[in-house]
Image (cartoon, rainbow, N blue to C red; front, side, top):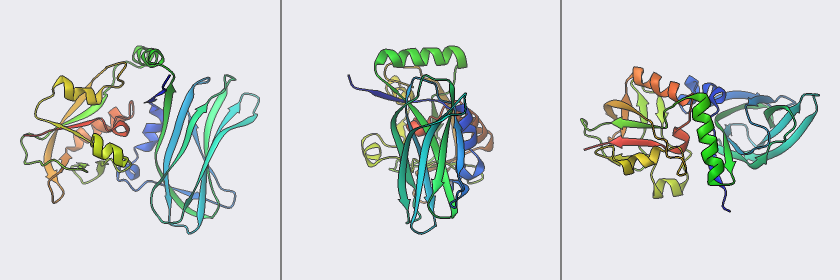
Length: 270
């Protein structure tokens, strides 16, 4: 049976991810190398399967960076669950992925450890853990449990720009009124850009358009966060500005569920 991958909301991680630096797209700085490492606590569940990923870059020449997922058991035993390594010698963002890591049933906590071969300053952003489901029933049980325990949450962003001269584009962006980049789909694959786009467009919120921001094809829970654009951005007028108050609402919603990672964004245009 084909496996289904769905993003798990990691509220603790998202509060860390959406610092001012990461909102600007610059990433958060780390000093690595010569025995220095950085550890992230991941609130994963035992006995589940995850895909863990994060984006890293560095200006250090000929540097290799490694991410390693470990379980720290209650008896302090450290068990390595998986690792991934990549060279960062071009100053560009690279995504490291740990595919299909199964967490043990034994009690303990989980840490993602970042190390590098050369000393210097590195940058990270977009740390995610995605739950991999074996069946649609697993997916339905997950979302039912999540809604019962966490309560309702926003599943996607709808930007109403019908009062503006906004144009459709391949790489539209969303900025705060002060100029902070909130969303640009910079890590979207070429397939995503070509097949579905990093935003959906429409003149009205139809049921078909809302399917884009459903949490799961097997569990069509939809709750749009609707904001109004206050202006167009970029020379091509394909991007938008939103108010500082709406920026705050978006970041608070993202602390519960990372809909930007799923490209669950809709622009309403004329």
